[in-house]
Length: 489
Image (tube, rainbow, N blue to C red; front, side, top):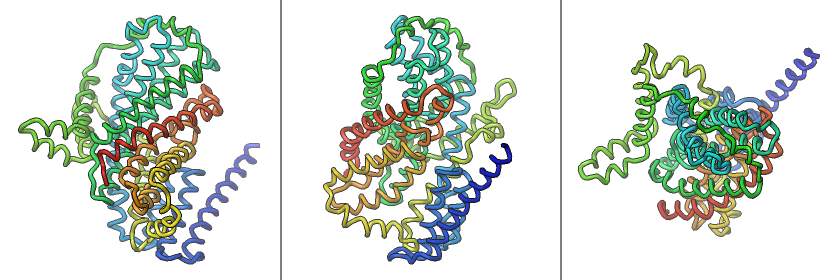
């Protein structure tokens, strides 16, 4: 039996590799290049489609290396420029340092302390609905400054403690809803700030390169936190009046016993709170600091640091600080825990818009030239609705990192359609690509609840797409008007 499985796996692998080679070869050597796509551009299209297949079917790590390497072989870009726009992009060290800072927050117990602060308030005692709302609020607030996978692991463990205390069992509706709701709130929050959420500042870099417009962390957060408030209120309505789980036993939660599991504040917690707090201030508040008389120069300096420098300095400082002869951040240990496949994939995604836009490639020009007659007659509002639906539905089915690369397709089209603000569309892509709820394939954290048997995939899909619909409505009615106001084009 084991040999049969191995043969089947081996056969499947060779079929996948054959498909990749055939797809690339067809575009590079067989299919004629339609103007203005060049022969090298056809090779780029071939390896891009082959990489998409590998990302979805096989892995995200090594196919990303393959993509960058084979693009270099096509000759559409010199190697120095290619690496500058992929591995040399600021988003690579940003992502690595964001992972390490989140690890330190978790390892010191700061994230657990933050979570239990909301759940163990005295006003929640004997109030099951209030307890659950405060629980989900804690998830959302922490999700604004952290990655969804780490938050899901932490809060699922806390939720299991709460269920054990109150007598809930796996399979009950509240348990099923809470476990997947943790993911929905953590992942949803990643759309509303750029803090530790690499796909958003990555699109900031593209906007700066393509339109010469700088989008700051503060501007984006101010706009999309308004969307986030509506998103959270919508979830509470869905939770309370659509799913309607029985929360009565949660009235028996022993808040004092749960609070007693927390140890006194440690030096490590205080240190990471201060260091990460300074990083967030540097990212988000230079405009406010600039309003203080005499601090204009400081604000300009903070703005000049960009996305990459503050977290790099923070990680270095944490490496220098030792308690009980142990560094706050052990780089060797952290590097063993970093999901390097995501880092590799980011290098490929960051290079997509640059590569497609090269004259020596011609892909962006072809897309614009081909689609403009079809899309050009659309009302600008209809175009934006189509983009919102396309990005949000797609990101519920496939990797949100992959969906962020749709910038290279959607934004050039937006720039070509009369009356459409391409910067607004780009920011809707930046937020929307993170709004993944419905299917386990949408992002790494999406399969945690269903994979552990807490939530049925059908349940996740049913209410995940309902939450997706509500999110799309929030983007269109709140996010889009605000983006137009702050970024006229």
